[in-house]
Length: 266
Image 1 (cartoon, rainbow, N blue to C red):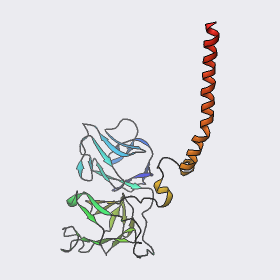
Image 2: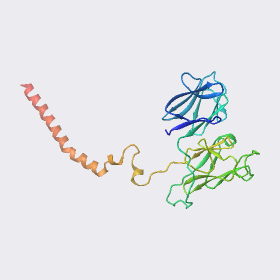
Image 3: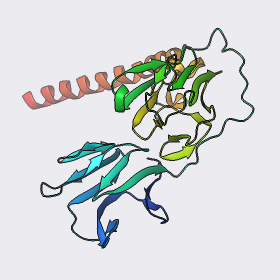
Image 4: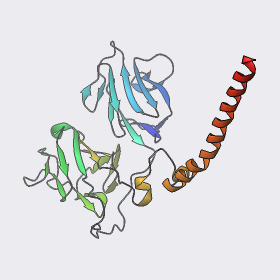
């Protein structure tokens, strides 16, 4: 999996890189929550499949994205973890891409129909999906597609749109910007799986189907390289060429059995 860092959102400290393994989270000193060695009631686990949080029964006040965690919670980049009143944020080691010189030419007619959606995973829009077949306005304005009715939120906070085949987030002059994979941004090019947060609690994940490869690769089994796939005609010739050897072997075995019967009876 991609390298992930743990950021201490409310403290002026460097990010902690998270390698594969189990990382304890606890108080290193009064008022200081950090990664700790040894036994811990809160553990952040990382392996090649993903990330999750394990919490012991006696650990209270642990939340992920505002939801209390009893025993375990699956995690993704951009999630906010709260332990003992401290906010920790999972951020990617890869910088968020900024849109520069994107061409808005229409997608070719023979290109696959990529149905890109924003799926709500937290806040008021949890469980709802918004397609990007048309630009989506985020803000407090009554006509906003994703309306966040907070007095401090901008009427026109941001716009999400498809530019060619790229998903682009454009800031419209908001005061605080948005969060993409835990990073504060204004404008960004989004990838499938990216998490976008508005107003600190309204969370969305970008979802899009994968492209199907074109050409001969599309018909080949995914787990067998093309170089190892013999054409049908070649495989047929190989089977025909092996037939005489099989007949000779069968004749030799028959002759050996006849000899054994003949000499054995005498």
